[in-house]
Structures are given as C-alpha cells and as structure tokens.
Length: 149
Image (cartoon, rainbow, N blue to C red; front, side, top):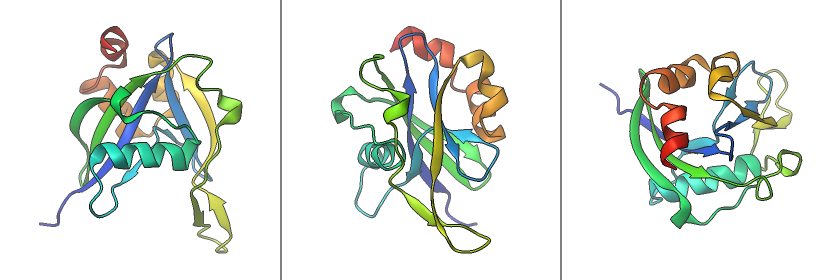
C-alpha cells in the first residue's frame, strides 16, 4: 500500500459565507488553494504558503482555524484550515498566481491558477472538482463553517 499524500489548504469564506475558489489553468475545475507540504513544513505553514503562491493573499497564521484532515480521494487526504476575510482584505482582481508548471502539450510555463471567484455554498457543485464538491456535501458543511467562524 502506498502512502497517502496530504494536500494542505485554506477554505476562505467572505462575510456572506461564500467560499474562495481558484480556477485550475486549462482544466474545467475550481479548487481551494492547496498543495503538498515541503519537507519539515507544518500543515499550517504549507497551507499559508500555498495560499500566497496560488492567490497572492498573505494572512497571519494565527487566524487560521484548523479543521483537521479529510479523506479526499483514494490516494490523497486534505488537511484544511478555515478563515473568514472581509471584502476590504481580499479583492479578487488583486489575486495573482505565482506558482507555474509546464503545460502538458508543449512545456510552456503556465500559472497553476488563472481565475478566482467567490462561490456560494449552493453553487459549489457547479464549479468545484467532484472530490471537493463531495467533501463539502458530506463532511465539511460550508453553511456550518459560516456559522462557526
């Protein structure tokens, strides 16, 4: 049995309870900012670094609420943190992805994320990957999170 990989990410809610989703370049799906921890990095540090790399958003580590680890896919778990942000704090037009990867077809370096949007819990299924949508439907209720943050 191979070790499960863990992706660390941030579930960011605005004042209305909408969740920030990032569009994965050249795919059909939207996702929360997340990624694997570097060696020696804590899940919180990894989540914050991925947030900066994929959105340009910088937050104080103390603001993140540790939601714990969730089964995400057969081979991967998610360690998620939640945070509430104000409209003034996070402007979608200022979001920028600093993380690049080579395009499969020709090797051109392209950003990991290329668009950002606030999505209401009711609309998450239309945008999120199946795995993420299932997580929000079954295990991690965005409505409950909105109440408790």
